[in-house]
Structures are given as C-alpha cells and as structure tokens.
Amino acid sequence: MTEVIGVRFKKVGKVYDFDPVNLKVDKDSYVIVETARGVEYGQVATPNHEVEDDQIVKPLRRVLRAATEEDKKTVEENQRLEKEAFAICEKKIRAHQLEMKLVEVEYTFDRGKILFYFTADGRVDFRELVKDLASVFRTRIELRQIGVRDEAKMLGGLGVCGCPLCCATFLDDFAPVSINMAKDQGLSLNPSKISGSCGRLMCCLKYENEAYQDLLRTTPPVDSLVETPNGQGVVTEISLLRGFCKVRLEDSNEAPRLYRKDELTVLRPGRIRARRSKNKSADHGEASPKAQEIGPKPEPVSQKVEPAPALKVEEERGESREKPQRPQPRRPRENREKRENWEGRENREKREGRNNRESRENREGRENGENRENRSRPPRRYPPRRPRKNGEGKPEGKTED
Image (cartoon, rainbow, N blue to C red; front, side, top):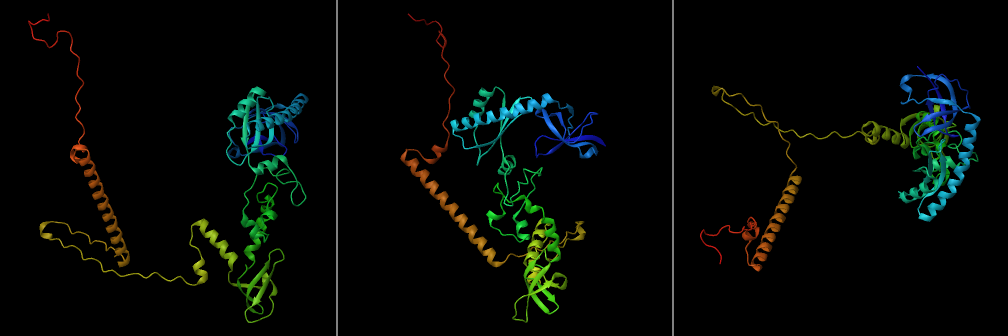
C-alpha cells in the first residue's frame, strides 16, 4: 500500500496521483507539484489515502509544498497574460492566413512554456506561426490540435436539456457512445435531436444504456411470435419502461391488444434479438443464428470417393510397404473447363506478345544496319591508352636531329 493524494489542474479535469511526502492536505486545498511539464499549481481532489501498488501509474511524482498567497497571485497574473496572448495569437493566425480556430491559451506556473489549443479540419502547417510567437513571447511555444468534444469542454455552454454541458460540469473523461444506444432506447435517429453542442452524439445516451440493456433481455422484441392468454400472436410494439407489449393475434382481425411482458411466452424471437445475437456472435467469432431462425440448415452433400489402391511392393526385395495415397477430390467439370480456357488465353496472349516484340526488334535492326544478335551484344571496352614518356618505346641508337 502506498499513500497518495489526487490533484486536479483544471476545474473539470482528470485527477492525477502524487506522493504527498508526509504532507497532510485537505480537500479543495491547493498545492505545488512536480509534473512532466515542470512545476504546476493544482487543487486537491482527494486527500491522503492509500492505494494498491499495482494501481499506481509510474512514475509517481511528489508534492513540493502547499500553495501560498504568492502562488495564488502568480496564477492570477498568468490568467491575465493568457488573455493577452490569445489576442496576439489570433492576429498572427490572420496574418499567416491559416485555417485554424484558436480555443484556449495556457501558461505553465513558472511561465516556461505557453500552450495554444486550436481546432482545424485537417493538418495545419504552423511552423512559421511558431517562429513568430516565439519572437514575441521569448519562451517555449507549443501548439496542440484538439477535437470538437474537447473544444466544447473548454468553452462550456448549455445543452438541449437547458442544463450546463456534462463535459464542462462533472465528466472527467469522454466515454464512447454509439448509435446503437439510441436505437435500443427507442429515440429518434434524427442527428439534430441526438447530437450535442459539439456535433457528436450526446454523452448522456450512455447514462441509462445499462438499464435499457437489462430491459431488452426480459422483453420480447418486435416481430416476435409469442403465446398470449388469448392465443398466439406477433408483437407489433413494445414499451420498455412500462413493461407492456402490443400483440396482434393471428386468428383475429381486431386491433393489437396490450399485454404485460410477464404474460407472454416467446416462441420465436424477432428482429431486435436477432440483431443483438448477430452482433454478439460476430464479436465472439461464432456463426450467425440467421439460418436457425429461417429453418434448419441443409447438411452439405458429401461425395463418396473410392480410395486409391495401395501400391504393392515386393517384400522379397526388402523394400518397405508404402502408405496408400489420400484420395484427391475431383474438381467440378465447369470449373476445370473455365480454368483451362483461362490458361489457354493467357498462353496465347504471351505468345502473341513475344512474336510482336521479336518482329519489332528485327525491324529496328534492319533499319539501323545491324541484326538482333549484334544489338544485344554489349560493346567491347578497351583500357585507356597510357601516354608515353620521353624516349620510351624508341629503338636504341637513334636520336632525333
């Protein structure tokens, strides 16, 4: 067991564990800690407590000291500088004509680095912008591209329910949300009704997803064949929260009747359960039960092939008896004919291409006054001639006049 404290650096941000180093702190107090970005000012989210050693994220950094009034003034001064840096950066972005939107500016506690958060549709080449900002602020500059969900969390706002955004209020991290959650809850699939301020699916779709999953396991899906107190029928509509189902009886022309789900017995599941079981089988690598719903799957017809006789080997010669060969299944006649036609066409095309190439080479050889063999032979190379020195190579006794 290791004693740690939880520290949060933003109002709604992730909580990180730090080693208190025998320092007792209270919740909502402020401390100065050592991070990968340097010295930072954070708020205590969870006071001193012990956790298992295998749950600690290495390396476990330590708390330097408790924050003072001077540290609080430094943070306020940094917030004032962030507003000025935001305005300067926007002017530089317009000057460089970059397709990016600046969201937030953050100073580190020791002002050793400035972080600029922005959004963009694609990749942005901001190297010249970084040089411009570094010449203005005379410190390290870092630009980070974020997504639309992080942008909504930083800026905040109101949702379609009229309440502040969940991500800007209490959500520490984003959970994956899929369109299947809206389908299971019976919501409208209109994107404008199930999307949040960020343009993505609303995070609140996941809050009640587990409850709907439990109700779907105990409620007959639509198009299910069920047994009711009045006979067999097909489910036409379900109400998960109320626990009622509308069933149209087979031998009746009346309107669908309302039954409680406890009064029904499923004889054949409908489309929702079939879809769910199909997804489940796909996840686990099982076969899809679609064939079981329609009817029994026909067994494959097996062709009986007579095994080839074993090769006889004379034992008088001392040779070992060979094992019988495994029978090879014969290909269907249609596939065999297709393959033979395909191979014949390929050979014919290769042969025609080779003839055309040879005729073209011979024609070019005649025009240039040389045949194919001479053209293919590489030219003979001779070593360079060494210049003669004075008197070298001349017969003795003869001199120049």
